[in-house]
Length: 256
Image 1 (tube, rainbow, N blue to C red):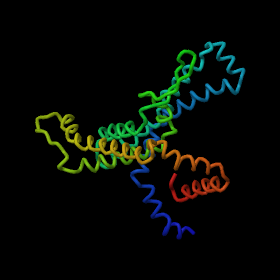
Image 2 (spheres, helix red, strand yellow):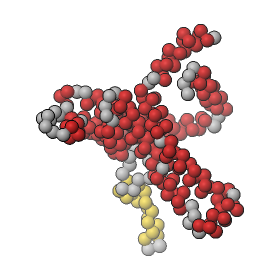
Image 3 (tube, rainbow, N blue to C red):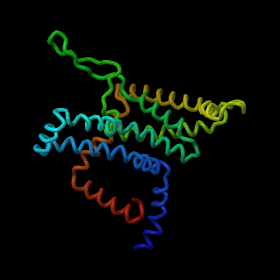
Image 4 (spheres, rainbow, N blue to C red):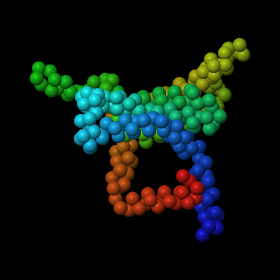
């Protein structure tokens, strides 16, 4: 059995374990552990007041009716922007794996992620005792920034970084300044054209994608086609068994 695993499974497992994209995702999410931990505690303490009524009454008696405001603020500063943190972290780690300093890459990836979001949200206003609903520019749902959009953020971060790094290696796109220019300025101008080109490509893709999908943005389409079916499948017994099997299989061959 061990001979079979060593000969046929381990080589592929080693390749998967050393894949730079998976490592970038892993390292970025691990680096966010302080954010996820404090956000989790904030949500836990706030929700305890709803589950354990005496605890909620005690906190309200000590700190007042708005005792859970702090927890809500911490949630908003952590979980509400989980995908944004992931985009920055994954892009930085992936660019670093290619020998890039990662700073310009993570900014460009973030710009690509933001420009693929919807710019108009539905807003309901009460005018003369009548509710009027319509589109308003600049109102973006928090669901496009929190963990709901995490899959989209991972995809965009990986692809945008790959494009940026590859364009940065094309010597005809690199702007070289004289030796007397400060290194920080020289590095920024060296990545100027690749960064602009990456953002332009993402913008064109987003425009064409909305045309093809009848106005759907990338996150909504991915949620509808991939994420939602997977979430529904998780509730089934075969999928639950498959998950447990994969967890133990990966642990057995050294992929934690």
